[in-house]
Length: 266
Image (tube, rainbow, N blue to C red; front, side, top):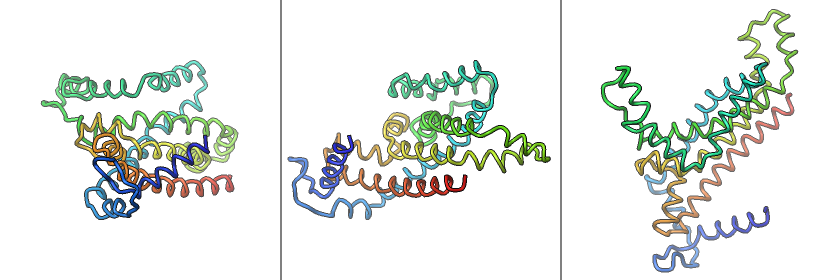
């Protein structure tokens, strides 16, 4: 698998320097124009910043939502309740992503469940616009990212010895101090792993922006898809892919160092 992946990696990187030809898709004429066009065009730079901001926002919100859930699953003494919630969290992944996205289209639409509930409660007078914009894309991606994050938190918190908390309580620490001084530092490896996996999947997402964004939101993933599938500009699509890959590599490098420091500390 590594061998085949390496071959495709080399081929794609080589393709990013080819010249686009609308009749032959590309010509084996090497040029830096694809990279120059990307970094000199304000539109592509804006899409790059929007993609990083989207991935970061979704990752942080997923962490805020997932940490209490993962902590609850790890600390609850009711095995049946834990199994029930784990089943609820896993069940959506037995459904194809396209089906889930169509479900979000119905759920977030003008006549969807959210707007109907809010209007029936007289909280709003007109339906909220939750689709074909950035909030809709964020909601769909947060749902996908939370599952990864929850199990990363659950795995590391369940491995923390409960005696640490008991010892701190005996020494007079309250619950907030126990969480900040013991549980949170010891759960950092799970937070690092969860945010890394979540960010890595978010930065390359293209189905969520295409379906829930409705063409009004552009990310690097959606640009790659349109350049490869619609305009057939494979060299430029490969260029965007490797720019995104380089950014992901820098993030992985940063997080790998953070993980090493955590392992050395704990």
